[in-house]
Structures are given as C-alpha cells and as structure tokens.
Length: 287
Ligand SMILES: Cc1cc2nc3c(=O)[nH]c(=O)nc-3n(C[C@H](O)[C@H](O)[C@H](O)COP(=O)(O)OP(=O)(O)OC[C@H]3O[C@@H](n4cnc5c(N)ncnc54)[C@H](O)[C@@H]3O)c2cc1C
Ligand code: SF4
Image 1 (cartoon, protein in one colour):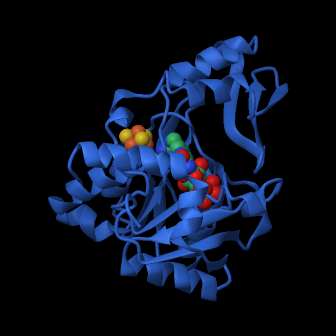
Image 2 (cartoon, rainbow, N blue to C red):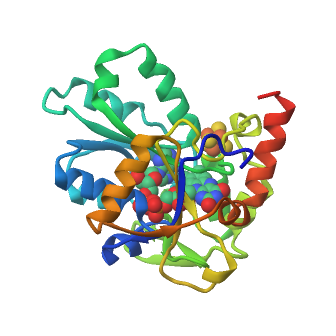
C-alpha cells in the first residue's frame, strides 16, 4: 500500500485487559503491550508522555518504570510534545538496560537518526512504538477552545483529550476546584479547532509520515463503519519490522492482546483523508 512505508503485518483489535482498554485512546494496544513487556522483563521501562501539570494543554515525556506510571501515560495528548526528557532519564540510569519508546512519527524518525550515532542508547532502545498521526495542533488551540467554552486555562487542573467513550468519544476538563466538565468531541470548540488546521504547527504542514514508518510497531484508531457506536476502543496495528511482528505475535500468544488479521484496505478506509494528504506531500517532495 502506498504512503505508509514498509508493512509486514496488519491486525485489528485491542488489549485483553479491559481496564487498560477502557483507560486508553483506542484499543489500548500501546499501553497493553508496554505493561506486558515490562512484566515479562523484555523492557525495564518505557519513554511515554503524560499530561504536563505546569501547563495543562501540554504533554511531557517520562521514563515509566511501573504499571501505574504506564496507566497514567495512556491516551492521546493533542499537541506537540517531546520524548527527549524521558530518553535522557534512561540514558543516565545505569539500572535501565532495555527500554521501549513511544512517539509520534516525527519523534521516532528523529530518534532513529540519533541512534545511528549513539551506541549506548542504541543498545538500550529495544523497541519503538509509533502513534500514527494525521496532524497535530499548537497548545494555543486548546487555550482558545477552552475560552470558547467559558473556561480560563489558569483555572484548569487537567485536560484529558480522550476522556471516555471511543466512537464517538468525549474530552474532559478537570477544574482546580475538582469539578469535571465533560464535552462530546463531535461539534465541540476543540474539535473545530482540530479540524480547521488553523493551529497546525508548520512542521506538520511539511510532514509526509502518517504511519510512523521508522517505528517497529504503529497504531491508530480503527475508524471503520462496522465499529461505529462502539464505546470500547479498537485499534489498527501494523508492523514495519520483523522485530515488531515477533513482539506482537508473542503478545497475542501470551493473551496480552486480542487481535485478528486486518488489511491494507481497513487501514486506508479508517484514515483515507490523512493518508491521502500525506501521500500528496510525499509526491510533492519526491520522496
Ligand atoms: C497528535 C496525534 C494525532 C493522531 N492522529 C491520528 C489520526 O489521524 N488517525 C488515527 O487513527 N489515530 C491518530 N492518532 C492515534 C490515536 O489517537 C491513538 O494514539 C492510537 O490509536 C494508539 O491508541 P492506544 O489505545 O493503543 O494507545 P494508548 O494505550 O492510549 O497509549 C497512547 C500512547 O501514546 C503516547 N502519546 C499520547 N499522546 C502523545 C503525543 N502527543 N506525543 C507522543 N506520545 C504521545 C502516550 O504516552 C501513550 O504511551 C493520533 C494521536 C496523536 C497524539
Ligand atoms: S503531523 Fe508529522 S510533524 Fe506533525 S506531529 Fe504528526 S508526525 Fe509530527
């Protein structure tokens, strides 16, 4: 299939653990896999993103070393983030020998370039999970969407971009006074900001990588008609490397993931707007 890099296998499904699945963005594949890999000793930790308490629209990376920390990192953060902080923690922790890294396609491709010249970190990073990405938005978009809902960002403790439900889903705003304001994504100020592309970072305008082509394993939502109205999430999982395929097949075998075979057509139908837009950028850039 054009526009998504080298594809070894494609599946559709979710984490077997229902708590993980319901606490995640889509089917909980990323968190379900990381928890199982941590428990089996395949990794000592994972670089993941959590909400940044110092400025609530943002995320920040951590090195998660426990199941609790991994559960805190579930769910998508709809703004530009970083993975360098978590990577640096892993670099200088001698007890950490093997890590997974989760990142957006741009973060994983940059990481691979860095690892080419960094033997110590190349030995530590044993698997990369990519979050397939149509586009992103600047955090000012969240601030403005909150304003449109009558909320001042300084009164907010936490924004959960994928709070509950899946297709459709809600986002939630936890106020400093403990009150939680819940919004259906569809028709909300935040959805309008997201879809308008007005606050899309300039790097995203030039980005041709939807499927995290440099990752071993990549995940996205299975936005397919047959799942519409489903509150429990489904993900599409694809592997770009043999290592990615071996890891996913082992996780299926160990009952951490419940996956059935998917097709390139499933992937295309679930995200054709994003794939076509990035394919056009690839063609324009002769990639
Ligand atoms: C900016 C953005 C754009 C996306 N665009 C699309 C799209 O166009 N189509 C589509 O189908 N899916 C898209 N996704 C992916 C989708 O929302 C889910 O993240 C994906 O399906 C994985 O779901 P999961 O339940 O397996 O992950 P979970 O188990 O919920 O875990 C999510 C993982 O992603 C990490 N993460 C979350 N946000 C970020 C971030 N901003 N930067 C780096 N790491 C992060 C978390 O640390 C966590 O490890 C996008 C996600 C993001 C963050
Ligand atoms: S669209 Fe590309 S550059 Fe923008 S966040 Fe997604 S992967 Fe990164």
